[in-house]
Length: 251
Image (cartoon, rainbow, N blue to C red; front, side):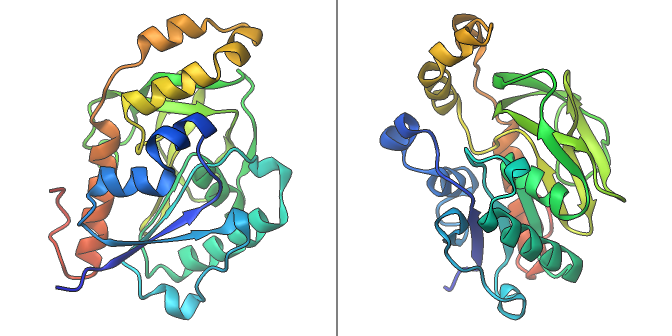
């Protein structure tokens, strides 16, 4: 049976050590959602690969925009081109779209929000995400406070006009946003498991300690969580429902 296709818009690669041990972002998303759930197609925009036209984008079941070591605020050419494409796809409202970390920020920027360095500095490890809108179909079903995996320097400082804030962490008021229609963004990394998160902390330990953090304490606090997988599978169910292949419930 032919499977629907999910488009992964790759905005960069994972940390070198994590990539060496576990593969890259697109593999982690496929594993978390389910390797057999979709045919996964990746377009690496950071390597100047070409995104599908608006007319052919509708052939996909949905779009996931990955994280990146790049910074949205630097407004690199490939990033700005991707932002314009995302704005068109979201305005067309035929496809469910999920932005993750850099992808979350890039969508916010594309729609008129403001992205920049987190005033509280680097965030890394397992954080607590507080759900603010329990009626949202994507993040609402999470526990009122859910552990999530994070690694980022920039955040959405001002949400774009019309966006709905779905939840926050202690230092990030716009940690999850519903941009309208079937488009969302989350600052946390739902594709990370605890092993990948620990790999990131270990790889950045000297950097974290040099910035005044306690890398050992951050490492000790990393824990496994199903919150990210549940969000990704709910997004997959939304994609299924849009294609007539499901009832909108997570599997």
